[in-house]
Length: 226
Image (cartoon, rainbow, N blue to C red; front, side):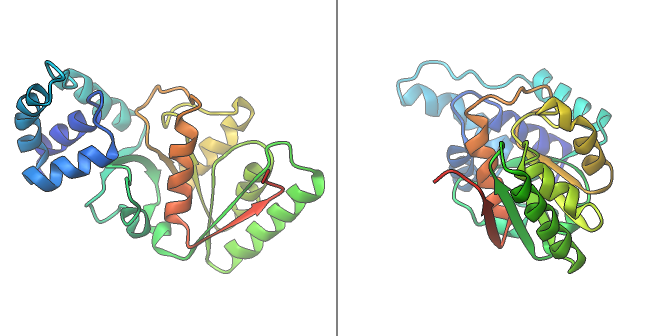
């Protein structure tokens, strides 16, 4: 993929009102990000929405530069390093930002998630289960939240664990997990759908959860609310 095509694809998904579903539809119809961007103003005009507010080239270029500065990279949904499981999800993220080892997503993956205010026994169980799975070469996936998520990541650090976050790749939430997030980002796998600098707003968490579920062969919920 050329640099120009990568830039066009990124501009397309960062354009207001272009979500994952419409991004994939545009790519399917026009065959490339560059062609989709060229066609978008006319499509918007014919749809009665006025002038298209396409993400500027400078915005996408700054994001690419910032991602590189952070030691991360963009992976688009049709590239080899993108999770084959996630690719099959309806409305899969057109692009994710990752740090380090995407190869672990080609192993069996199990998500461990649960309550943020989990009991001590639930956290011990999550930590031990994660350690047992990691010892069997299973990648443990979770969301780096307080409680069960934190315990699962810590338990799996001796093997493989993937953290999926609702913020930009450079934002730690909750703040007390900053060191854990950096450890995962340095020698495990950290995944974000949002551009760098994005704070973890409420609408981002369901989007994050679809990634967790999408890359996992199964999910274990511990003390989660019904």
